[in-house]
Image (cartoon, rainbow, N blue to C red):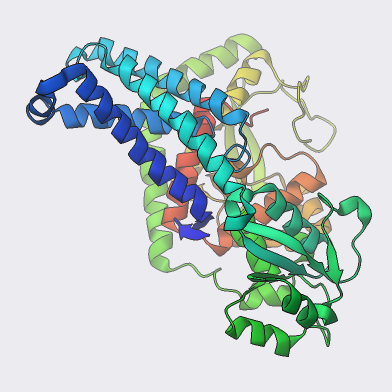
Length: 463
Protein backbone atom coordinates (compact mmCIF):
# COMPACT_ATOMS: atom_id res chain seq x y z
CA UNK A 1 0.00 0.00 0.00
CA UNK A 2 1.12 3.55 -0.75
CA UNK A 3 0.13 6.51 1.40
CA UNK A 4 -1.21 9.50 -0.54
CA UNK A 5 -3.26 12.40 0.85
CA UNK A 6 -2.96 10.70 4.27
CA UNK A 7 -5.01 7.76 2.95
CA UNK A 8 -3.80 4.39 1.64
CA UNK A 9 -4.05 3.00 -1.88
CA UNK A 10 -2.95 -0.40 -3.26
CA UNK A 11 0.20 -0.20 -5.38
CA UNK A 12 -1.50 -2.13 -8.17
CA UNK A 13 -4.43 0.29 -8.29
CA UNK A 14 -2.09 3.27 -8.51
CA UNK A 15 -0.11 1.45 -11.22
CA UNK A 16 -3.39 0.90 -13.08
CA UNK A 17 -4.31 4.59 -12.80
CA UNK A 18 -0.91 5.72 -14.12
CA UNK A 19 -0.68 3.23 -16.98
CA UNK A 20 -4.27 3.82 -18.12
CA UNK A 21 -3.67 7.57 -18.08
CA UNK A 22 -0.63 7.04 -20.33
CA UNK A 23 -2.64 4.67 -22.52
CA UNK A 24 -5.39 7.28 -22.94
CA UNK A 25 -2.80 9.88 -23.98
CA UNK A 26 -1.18 7.46 -26.44
CA UNK A 27 -4.56 6.52 -27.94
CA UNK A 28 -5.50 10.19 -28.35
CA UNK A 29 -2.21 10.95 -30.08
CA UNK A 30 -2.76 7.99 -32.39
CA UNK A 31 -6.24 9.35 -33.23
CA UNK A 32 -4.72 12.76 -33.96
CA UNK A 33 -2.24 11.22 -36.42
CA UNK A 34 -5.06 9.27 -38.09
CA UNK A 35 -7.23 12.38 -38.54
CA UNK A 36 -4.53 14.96 -39.31
CA UNK A 37 -1.95 12.91 -41.18
CA UNK A 38 1.26 14.76 -42.07
CA UNK A 39 -0.01 18.04 -40.53
CA UNK A 40 -0.27 16.52 -37.06
CA UNK A 41 2.88 18.02 -35.52
CA UNK A 42 2.20 21.46 -37.00
CA UNK A 43 -1.39 21.64 -35.76
CA UNK A 44 -0.54 20.25 -32.33
CA UNK A 45 2.29 22.73 -31.88
CA UNK A 46 0.76 25.87 -33.40
CA UNK A 47 -3.01 25.68 -32.81
CA UNK A 48 -2.93 24.67 -29.09
CA UNK A 49 -3.39 21.09 -30.20
CA UNK A 50 -1.67 19.57 -27.18
CA UNK A 51 -3.97 21.51 -24.86
CA UNK A 52 -7.05 20.36 -26.79
CA UNK A 53 -5.90 16.74 -26.61
CA UNK A 54 -5.17 17.11 -22.89
CA UNK A 55 -8.72 18.34 -22.28
CA UNK A 56 -10.13 15.20 -23.91
CA UNK A 57 -7.74 13.00 -21.89
CA UNK A 58 -8.75 14.64 -18.59
CA UNK A 59 -12.46 14.33 -19.36
CA UNK A 60 -12.04 10.64 -20.28
CA UNK A 61 -10.13 9.90 -17.08
CA UNK A 62 -12.59 11.63 -14.80
CA UNK A 63 -15.56 9.94 -16.49
CA UNK A 64 -13.84 6.61 -15.85
CA UNK A 65 -13.23 7.53 -12.21
CA UNK A 66 -16.82 8.66 -11.73
CA UNK A 67 -17.98 5.30 -13.10
CA UNK A 68 -16.09 3.55 -10.27
CA UNK A 69 -13.53 1.90 -12.55
CA UNK A 70 -10.92 2.19 -9.78
CA UNK A 71 -13.23 1.06 -6.99
CA UNK A 72 -11.94 -2.08 -5.18
CA UNK A 73 -15.16 -3.96 -5.99
CA UNK A 74 -15.00 -3.14 -9.71
CA UNK A 75 -11.28 -3.14 -10.45
CA UNK A 76 -11.07 -6.96 -10.49
CA UNK A 77 -14.45 -7.71 -12.08
CA UNK A 78 -14.17 -8.84 -15.73
CA UNK A 79 -17.96 -8.50 -16.14
CA UNK A 80 -18.36 -5.00 -14.72
CA UNK A 81 -15.38 -3.33 -16.37
CA UNK A 82 -16.48 -3.35 -20.07
CA UNK A 83 -19.96 -2.01 -19.27
CA UNK A 84 -18.60 0.74 -17.04
CA UNK A 85 -15.95 1.65 -19.58
CA UNK A 86 -18.62 2.08 -22.24
CA UNK A 87 -20.74 4.17 -19.85
CA UNK A 88 -17.79 6.34 -18.88
CA UNK A 89 -16.57 6.96 -22.41
CA UNK A 90 -20.15 7.53 -23.57
CA UNK A 91 -20.48 10.23 -20.92
CA UNK A 92 -17.17 11.71 -22.12
CA UNK A 93 -18.59 11.90 -25.66
CA UNK A 94 -21.65 13.79 -24.43
CA UNK A 95 -19.51 16.22 -22.44
CA UNK A 96 -17.25 16.84 -25.43
CA UNK A 97 -20.27 17.36 -27.70
CA UNK A 98 -21.61 20.05 -25.36
CA UNK A 99 -18.15 21.61 -25.04
CA UNK A 100 -17.60 21.75 -28.81
CA UNK A 101 -21.10 23.15 -29.37
CA UNK A 102 -20.47 25.94 -26.85
CA UNK A 103 -16.82 26.52 -27.85
CA UNK A 104 -16.26 25.34 -31.46
CA UNK A 105 -12.64 26.51 -31.40
CA UNK A 106 -11.78 23.95 -28.72
CA UNK A 107 -12.22 21.06 -31.21
CA UNK A 108 -8.94 19.73 -32.61
CA UNK A 109 -10.45 18.67 -35.92
CA UNK A 110 -13.69 17.27 -37.30
CA UNK A 111 -14.29 13.66 -36.28
CA UNK A 112 -11.38 13.60 -33.81
CA UNK A 113 -13.44 12.70 -30.72
CA UNK A 114 -15.27 9.80 -32.39
CA UNK A 115 -11.99 8.30 -33.62
CA UNK A 116 -10.25 9.01 -30.31
CA UNK A 117 -12.97 7.52 -28.10
CA UNK A 118 -13.14 4.40 -30.29
CA UNK A 119 -9.38 3.81 -30.00
CA UNK A 120 -9.39 4.62 -26.27
CA UNK A 121 -12.31 2.26 -25.62
CA UNK A 122 -10.81 -0.71 -27.47
CA UNK A 123 -7.39 -0.14 -25.92
CA UNK A 124 -8.71 0.15 -22.37
CA UNK A 125 -10.97 -2.90 -22.61
CA UNK A 126 -8.07 -5.04 -23.85
CA UNK A 127 -5.65 -3.60 -21.29
CA UNK A 128 -8.05 -3.95 -18.37
CA UNK A 129 -8.79 -7.60 -19.19
CA UNK A 130 -5.04 -8.28 -19.27
CA UNK A 131 -4.62 -6.44 -15.97
CA UNK A 132 -7.39 -8.47 -14.33
CA UNK A 133 -5.78 -11.73 -15.45
CA UNK A 134 -2.35 -10.70 -14.17
CA UNK A 135 -3.81 -9.23 -10.99
CA UNK A 136 -5.40 -12.57 -10.07
CA UNK A 137 -2.23 -14.55 -10.69
CA UNK A 138 -1.02 -16.28 -7.52
CA UNK A 139 2.54 -16.28 -8.86
CA UNK A 140 2.75 -12.49 -8.46
CA UNK A 141 1.17 -12.37 -4.99
CA UNK A 142 2.86 -12.51 -1.58
CA UNK A 143 2.26 -15.74 0.34
CA UNK A 144 0.52 -14.58 3.53
CA UNK A 145 -0.60 -16.25 6.73
CA UNK A 146 -2.70 -14.85 9.56
CA UNK A 147 -1.89 -15.57 13.19
CA UNK A 148 -4.93 -15.57 15.43
CA UNK A 149 -8.64 -16.11 15.51
CA UNK A 150 -11.72 -14.03 16.16
CA UNK A 151 -13.49 -11.20 14.31
CA UNK A 152 -10.33 -9.29 13.36
CA UNK A 153 -8.59 -12.32 11.86
CA UNK A 154 -11.72 -13.32 9.92
CA UNK A 155 -12.21 -9.76 8.60
CA UNK A 156 -8.62 -9.66 7.37
CA UNK A 157 -8.97 -13.02 5.65
CA UNK A 158 -12.09 -11.88 3.82
CA UNK A 159 -10.43 -8.66 2.74
CA UNK A 160 -7.36 -10.43 1.37
CA UNK A 161 -9.38 -13.03 -0.54
CA UNK A 162 -11.81 -10.53 -2.03
CA UNK A 163 -9.23 -7.96 -3.14
CA UNK A 164 -6.54 -9.37 -5.45
CA UNK A 165 -5.23 -5.84 -6.10
CA UNK A 166 -3.64 -6.00 -2.64
CA UNK A 167 -1.13 -8.43 -4.14
CA UNK A 168 -1.52 -10.98 -1.33
CA UNK A 169 -2.29 -14.72 -1.43
CA UNK A 170 -3.73 -16.13 1.79
CA UNK A 171 -2.04 -19.47 2.44
CA UNK A 172 -3.96 -20.10 5.67
CA UNK A 173 -4.00 -19.21 9.36
CA UNK A 174 -2.40 -20.28 12.64
CA UNK A 175 -4.49 -20.41 15.79
CA UNK A 176 -7.57 -22.00 17.27
CA UNK A 177 -10.11 -23.39 14.75
CA UNK A 178 -12.37 -20.71 13.31
CA UNK A 179 -16.15 -20.97 13.30
CA UNK A 180 -17.00 -22.83 10.03
CA UNK A 181 -19.73 -20.27 9.31
CA UNK A 182 -17.17 -17.46 9.19
CA UNK A 183 -14.76 -19.10 6.76
CA UNK A 184 -14.46 -17.71 3.25
CA UNK A 185 -13.48 -19.95 0.35
CA UNK A 186 -12.26 -22.66 2.71
CA UNK A 187 -9.47 -20.78 4.52
CA UNK A 188 -7.02 -23.46 5.71
CA UNK A 189 -5.93 -23.92 9.30
CA UNK A 190 -2.19 -24.58 9.15
CA UNK A 191 -1.84 -25.38 12.83
CA UNK A 192 -1.60 -23.62 16.17
CA UNK A 193 0.50 -20.55 16.90
CA UNK A 194 3.18 -22.86 18.36
CA UNK A 195 3.55 -24.46 14.90
CA UNK A 196 4.88 -21.25 13.34
CA UNK A 197 8.45 -22.51 12.94
CA UNK A 198 7.37 -25.83 11.43
CA UNK A 199 4.90 -24.18 9.01
CA UNK A 200 7.35 -21.53 7.77
CA UNK A 201 9.96 -24.24 7.33
CA UNK A 202 7.90 -26.33 4.93
CA UNK A 203 6.12 -23.62 2.90
CA UNK A 204 7.10 -20.20 1.54
CA UNK A 205 5.81 -17.28 3.63
CA UNK A 206 6.44 -13.65 2.72
CA UNK A 207 4.05 -11.88 5.09
CA UNK A 208 2.64 -12.68 8.52
CA UNK A 209 -0.28 -10.69 9.95
CA UNK A 210 -0.61 -10.94 13.73
CA UNK A 211 -4.29 -10.71 14.70
CA UNK A 212 -4.27 -12.53 18.04
CA UNK A 213 -6.85 -11.35 20.56
CA UNK A 214 -4.80 -12.65 23.52
CA UNK A 215 -1.03 -12.36 23.12
CA UNK A 216 0.09 -12.81 26.71
CA UNK A 217 2.63 -15.65 26.84
CA UNK A 218 1.36 -16.90 23.46
CA UNK A 219 3.14 -14.72 20.93
CA UNK A 220 6.26 -16.52 19.56
CA UNK A 221 8.52 -13.47 19.81
CA UNK A 222 11.80 -15.28 19.08
CA UNK A 223 10.52 -16.98 15.93
CA UNK A 224 8.82 -13.82 14.65
CA UNK A 225 12.04 -11.88 15.17
CA UNK A 226 14.00 -14.53 13.25
CA UNK A 227 11.53 -14.34 10.37
CA UNK A 228 11.57 -10.54 10.44
CA UNK A 229 15.35 -10.41 10.11
CA UNK A 230 15.24 -12.96 7.28
CA UNK A 231 13.04 -10.73 5.14
CA UNK A 232 9.48 -11.77 6.08
CA UNK A 233 7.09 -8.85 6.58
CA UNK A 234 5.50 -8.95 10.05
CA UNK A 235 2.44 -6.74 10.35
CA UNK A 236 0.14 -5.95 13.27
CA UNK A 237 -3.47 -6.88 12.49
CA UNK A 238 -4.98 -3.52 13.45
CA UNK A 239 -2.42 -1.70 11.32
CA UNK A 240 -3.19 -3.91 8.34
CA UNK A 241 -6.92 -3.38 8.87
CA UNK A 242 -6.46 0.40 8.93
CA UNK A 243 -4.27 0.49 5.83
CA UNK A 244 -6.38 -1.80 3.65
CA UNK A 245 -9.88 -0.79 4.74
CA UNK A 246 -9.48 2.90 5.50
CA UNK A 247 -11.05 2.54 8.95
CA UNK A 248 -10.15 1.28 12.43
CA UNK A 249 -11.31 -2.09 13.84
CA UNK A 250 -13.54 -0.65 16.58
CA UNK A 251 -14.88 -4.00 17.81
CA UNK A 252 -11.42 -5.44 18.46
CA UNK A 253 -9.45 -2.27 19.09
CA UNK A 254 -7.24 -2.19 22.18
CA UNK A 255 -6.85 1.13 24.05
CA UNK A 256 -3.08 0.53 24.10
CA UNK A 257 -2.99 0.48 20.29
CA UNK A 258 -4.78 3.84 20.17
CA UNK A 259 -2.40 5.28 22.75
CA UNK A 260 0.87 4.16 21.14
CA UNK A 261 0.00 4.24 17.43
CA UNK A 262 1.06 7.32 15.41
CA UNK A 263 -1.53 9.94 14.53
CA UNK A 264 -4.22 11.76 16.53
CA UNK A 265 -1.97 14.83 16.63
CA UNK A 266 -2.97 17.89 14.62
CA UNK A 267 -0.82 21.00 14.45
CA UNK A 268 -2.20 24.50 15.03
CA UNK A 269 -1.22 25.31 11.44
CA UNK A 270 -3.41 22.46 10.13
CA UNK A 271 -6.36 23.68 12.21
CA UNK A 272 -5.80 27.20 10.89
CA UNK A 273 -5.80 25.92 7.30
CA UNK A 274 -8.94 23.84 7.97
CA UNK A 275 -10.72 26.92 9.27
CA UNK A 276 -9.48 29.06 6.39
CA UNK A 277 -10.47 26.51 3.74
CA UNK A 278 -13.85 25.89 5.40
CA UNK A 279 -14.72 29.61 5.50
CA UNK A 280 -13.53 30.11 1.92
CA UNK A 281 -15.59 27.21 0.56
CA UNK A 282 -18.68 28.16 2.59
CA UNK A 283 -18.52 31.82 1.51
CA UNK A 284 -18.06 31.07 -2.19
CA UNK A 285 -20.71 28.34 -2.12
CA UNK A 286 -23.29 30.59 -0.45
CA UNK A 287 -22.73 33.32 -3.03
CA UNK A 288 -22.93 30.92 -5.99
CA UNK A 289 -25.94 29.07 -4.57
CA UNK A 290 -27.96 32.17 -3.63
CA UNK A 291 -30.39 31.74 -6.60
CA UNK A 292 -30.83 28.06 -5.62
CA UNK A 293 -31.49 29.07 -2.00
CA UNK A 294 -34.25 31.46 -3.09
CA UNK A 295 -35.90 28.88 -5.36
CA UNK A 296 -35.72 26.16 -2.70
CA UNK A 297 -37.21 28.47 -0.06
CA UNK A 298 -40.10 29.28 -2.41
CA UNK A 299 -40.66 25.58 -3.26
CA UNK A 300 -40.78 24.58 0.42
CA UNK A 301 -43.21 27.39 1.25
CA UNK A 302 -45.54 26.48 -1.65
CA UNK A 303 -45.38 22.76 -0.82
CA UNK A 304 -45.80 22.71 2.96
CA UNK A 305 -45.72 26.27 4.26
CA UNK A 306 -43.33 27.64 6.81
CA UNK A 307 -40.86 27.44 8.48
CA UNK A 308 -38.37 27.19 5.63
CA UNK A 309 -35.34 26.50 7.82
CA UNK A 310 -35.20 23.52 10.17
CA UNK A 311 -33.27 24.01 13.41
CA UNK A 312 -32.09 21.10 15.50
CA UNK A 313 -29.62 20.69 18.38
CA UNK A 314 -26.53 18.65 17.52
CA UNK A 315 -23.46 17.56 19.48
CA UNK A 316 -20.22 19.22 18.41
CA UNK A 317 -16.65 19.43 19.62
CA UNK A 318 -16.05 18.31 23.23
CA UNK A 319 -19.69 17.23 23.50
CA UNK A 320 -20.98 20.82 23.35
CA UNK A 321 -24.37 21.33 21.73
CA UNK A 322 -25.06 23.79 18.92
CA UNK A 323 -27.98 24.53 16.61
CA UNK A 324 -27.71 23.01 13.13
CA UNK A 325 -29.50 24.67 10.21
CA UNK A 326 -31.00 22.79 7.26
CA UNK A 327 -33.80 23.29 4.79
CA UNK A 328 -36.92 21.68 6.21
CA UNK A 329 -37.63 18.42 4.37
CA UNK A 330 -40.23 16.93 6.71
CA UNK A 331 -43.72 17.99 7.67
CA UNK A 332 -43.95 20.37 10.62
CA UNK A 333 -43.88 18.52 13.97
CA UNK A 334 -43.02 15.25 12.22
CA UNK A 335 -41.32 14.03 15.41
CA UNK A 336 -43.79 15.59 17.84
CA UNK A 337 -44.22 13.59 21.02
CA UNK A 338 -41.00 11.63 20.64
CA UNK A 339 -37.28 11.79 20.02
CA UNK A 340 -36.06 12.38 16.42
CA UNK A 341 -35.66 9.10 14.55
CA UNK A 342 -33.31 8.31 11.65
CA UNK A 343 -34.83 8.75 8.21
CA UNK A 344 -35.87 5.49 6.57
CA UNK A 345 -36.29 4.69 2.89
CA UNK A 346 -39.64 6.13 1.64
CA UNK A 347 -40.17 7.82 5.02
CA UNK A 348 -43.72 9.25 5.20
CA UNK A 349 -42.51 12.19 7.28
CA UNK A 350 -40.65 13.60 4.25
CA UNK A 351 -42.50 16.10 2.05
CA UNK A 352 -42.63 15.94 -1.74
CA UNK A 353 -40.11 18.76 -2.14
CA UNK A 354 -38.09 17.41 0.78
CA UNK A 355 -37.63 14.09 -0.95
CA UNK A 356 -35.88 15.81 -3.87
CA UNK A 357 -33.89 18.08 -1.59
CA UNK A 358 -32.55 15.07 0.31
CA UNK A 359 -31.81 13.11 -2.85
CA UNK A 360 -29.80 16.02 -4.28
CA UNK A 361 -28.34 16.96 -0.83
CA UNK A 362 -29.63 20.52 -1.31
CA UNK A 363 -31.15 20.46 2.19
CA UNK A 364 -27.58 20.65 3.57
CA UNK A 365 -26.87 24.13 2.13
CA UNK A 366 -27.81 26.12 5.29
CA UNK A 367 -25.08 24.23 7.17
CA UNK A 368 -22.65 26.54 5.39
CA UNK A 369 -23.85 29.18 7.88
CA UNK A 370 -22.81 26.89 10.75
CA UNK A 371 -19.37 26.73 9.15
CA UNK A 372 -19.13 30.52 8.99
CA UNK A 373 -20.10 30.67 12.67
CA UNK A 374 -17.15 28.40 13.49
CA UNK A 375 -19.32 25.58 14.86
CA UNK A 376 -18.29 23.19 12.08
CA UNK A 377 -15.54 22.59 9.55
CA UNK A 378 -16.39 21.79 5.97
CA UNK A 379 -14.84 18.34 6.51
CA UNK A 380 -15.21 16.38 9.73
CA UNK A 381 -17.37 13.74 11.45
CA UNK A 382 -21.08 14.37 10.85
CA UNK A 383 -22.93 15.73 13.91
CA UNK A 384 -26.05 13.97 15.19
CA UNK A 385 -28.88 14.77 17.58
CA UNK A 386 -28.05 14.44 21.30
CA UNK A 387 -30.34 11.53 22.15
CA UNK A 388 -28.93 9.42 19.31
CA UNK A 389 -25.33 10.39 20.08
CA UNK A 390 -25.62 9.63 23.79
CA UNK A 391 -27.29 6.28 23.13
CA UNK A 392 -24.61 5.32 20.59
CA UNK A 393 -21.88 6.44 23.00
CA UNK A 394 -23.34 4.08 25.58
CA UNK A 395 -23.34 1.09 23.22
CA UNK A 396 -20.30 1.59 20.97
CA UNK A 397 -16.77 1.67 22.41
CA UNK A 398 -14.65 4.78 21.73
CA UNK A 399 -17.67 6.62 20.33
CA UNK A 400 -17.00 9.79 22.30
CA UNK A 401 -13.68 10.15 20.47
CA UNK A 402 -15.73 11.58 17.59
CA UNK A 403 -16.27 14.67 19.72
CA UNK A 404 -12.55 15.52 19.95
CA UNK A 405 -12.75 17.49 16.68
CA UNK A 406 -15.30 19.85 15.19
CA UNK A 407 -17.99 18.13 13.09
CA UNK A 408 -18.22 18.70 9.35
CA UNK A 409 -20.72 19.06 6.52
CA UNK A 410 -19.06 16.08 4.84
CA UNK A 411 -16.62 13.49 6.11
CA UNK A 412 -14.62 10.32 5.50
CA UNK A 413 -17.48 8.13 6.71
CA UNK A 414 -19.94 9.83 4.35
CA UNK A 415 -17.80 9.29 1.24
CA UNK A 416 -16.86 5.70 2.16
CA UNK A 417 -20.30 4.31 3.06
CA UNK A 418 -23.99 5.15 2.74
CA UNK A 419 -26.64 6.37 5.14
CA UNK A 420 -26.42 5.16 8.76
CA UNK A 421 -29.59 3.87 10.38
CA UNK A 422 -28.77 0.81 12.54
CA UNK A 423 -26.38 0.30 15.44
CA UNK A 424 -24.11 -1.73 13.17
CA UNK A 425 -24.10 1.09 10.59
CA UNK A 426 -23.08 3.61 13.21
CA UNK A 427 -20.35 1.31 14.50
CA UNK A 428 -18.86 1.20 11.02
CA UNK A 429 -19.32 4.95 10.69
CA UNK A 430 -17.26 5.39 13.87
CA UNK A 431 -14.55 3.16 12.40
CA UNK A 432 -14.21 5.57 9.46
CA UNK A 433 -14.45 8.65 11.68
CA UNK A 434 -11.63 7.38 13.90
CA UNK A 435 -9.48 6.80 10.82
CA UNK A 436 -10.12 10.41 9.80
CA UNK A 437 -9.33 11.79 13.26
CA UNK A 438 -6.15 9.70 13.40
CA UNK A 439 -4.96 10.86 9.96
CA UNK A 440 -6.55 14.32 9.79
CA UNK A 441 -4.78 16.68 7.40
CA UNK A 442 -5.51 19.22 4.68
CA UNK A 443 -4.57 16.68 2.00
CA UNK A 444 -7.08 14.15 3.35
CA UNK A 445 -9.70 16.91 3.46
CA UNK A 446 -9.05 17.67 -0.21
CA UNK A 447 -9.48 13.98 -1.06
CA UNK A 448 -12.79 13.89 0.85
CA UNK A 449 -14.03 17.02 -0.94
CA UNK A 450 -13.08 15.44 -4.28
CA UNK A 451 -15.04 12.30 -3.39
CA UNK A 452 -17.96 14.40 -2.11
CA UNK A 453 -18.28 16.11 -5.49
CA UNK A 454 -18.54 12.68 -7.10
CA UNK A 455 -21.30 11.64 -4.68
CA UNK A 456 -23.23 14.86 -5.25
CA UNK A 457 -23.02 14.55 -9.04
CA UNK A 458 -24.15 10.92 -8.99
CA UNK A 459 -26.81 11.57 -6.31
CA UNK A 460 -25.72 8.70 -4.07
CA UNK A 461 -26.44 8.00 -0.42
CA UNK A 462 -29.24 10.46 0.29
CA UNK A 463 -32.53 9.60 2.00
